[in-house]
Image (tube, rainbow, N blue to C red; front, side, top):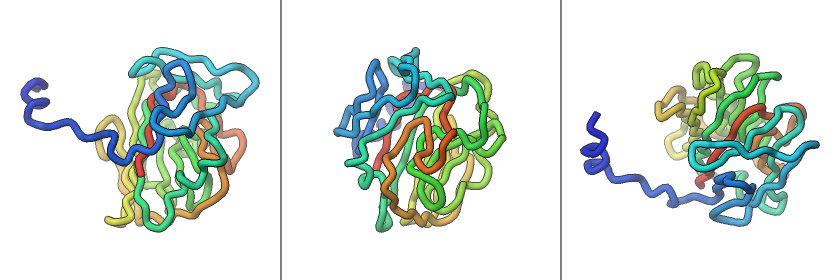
Length: 205
């Protein structure tokens, strides 16, 4: 592929358009576009490791995760037909429990990106049950990219893995809750902590 010709022919998307929170994880847990700065949770201090762009967080799968401010939880509810996208780079150190959460607002008709049961792949919920299928096997020690899109205007939820559309689900029907949005854990369910790298998490409205 002639990447130079491709880059000249296709203008880059405006990634800042609609971006409401972005955590680069380059040595801290701060939100680079807003005030949804993360708080480290867990017994041991979170370790920063080489990521895709700079650093990422390497969570231990025991009790470490990042919690965003409770005061900002409503901005991540996406009510009244608001579409949203969630993007992250990640790798798996080990799948040690079912449904390990990469990013989550809660259970039921709330949204989340997580390990699909006991399978070696990720799936996502954009407000109306998990999309069928998922990313395919990501338990390979490599860094992967995942995007979950909840698109109420077109009545579907889409899951992308490493740049490819891999699954489409039914119409979003998101319910609000009072949970803080979490990275590496599900706020509705204990013991869903992530074991591996997470880098450059972005959320768009």
